[in-house]
Image 1: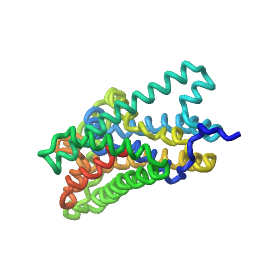
Image 2: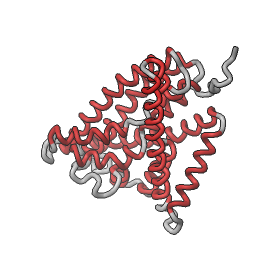
Image 3: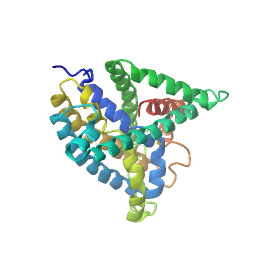
Image 4: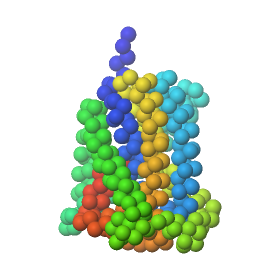
Length: 297
């Protein structure tokens, strides 16, 4: 007999892969990374690798359970069945609370970003509009929601790839720097690679692990994926390495181009990089990208 409570499986592998990437690559990378760099210095790269390794083991474990039992509820359901109802209850409500707080922070950020173009409009209007629109998007067919998340995430990913590519051009060939290669000496020329010691890395781990929040979406969407055994396996194998490359690669390029002590003093490091290349309206472009990040992360 068919279970009427089962969710409709309308998501494909491309949807869950980009949803996880989009959720994990958010405002924390485009703006918040400057704060983490200030705390840990260039050694923040080690911190992201350690955090990525931890997420790898978590995702492998979650992936095994999701493939074996692709149901709605994900890890709260698994905690309830394999540990105890109390663990399931606490896990589910804790996860709900995390995303409620995060979503409120994100829609507040939308108001701040829209103020860049419309300074005369109160922020709360944009925040309320974002809340209503995203609530409606979540109520429509899951496939449509997956497509919207797919394209929002793609905007962020293309921006990061472009920044990494042109950044490597600056480091190796002196692109945007009069043909003089920037090199990577900035990684150790301002107090050393471990400028703030291991204590700085440990203090930054809170921000680092928060930045990885969202990668677990692969497991959360297991109950709505077509052919979960195939789609989840490929998505989990792909997402981890891509996120690690995007985070570590982007920050490696940024800290090679600029002394880490200057990052954050002039706004987003992404804006700084685009402006150095002479790209017009760099601040506006990044503001738009970060706006999509706030709506989809």
